[in-house]
Length: 96
Image (cartoon, rainbow, N blue to C red; front, side):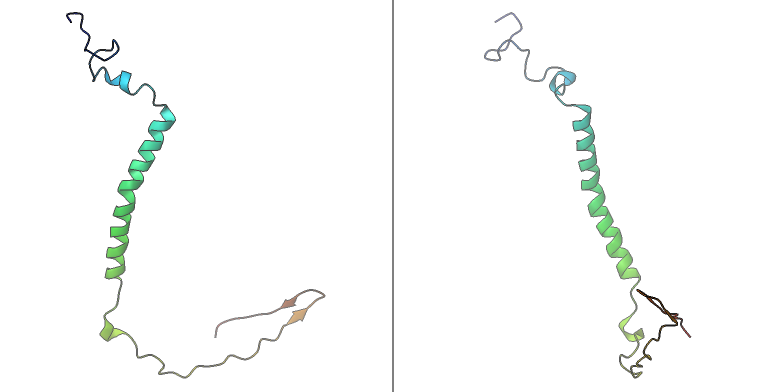
């Protein structure tokens, strides 16, 4: 009773003990993993909020959108190769 032991604890001192005693089984790798997971848990929701705000800011008003299908579809001419060898056709394509 007066020897500093708590009944039923197998000779250890109290539940708390020193902080270094409780975490001595954690390796440096375990601590780094926990830090990475904690950082991701904080960063991912914050990133989602930022991307949602930027998506709303960059949108045009419905009234400013162009009317669809007002210009007829232009079918481009068939591409003709300017050079051909045994295995490859070569094309020059540019915008006018």
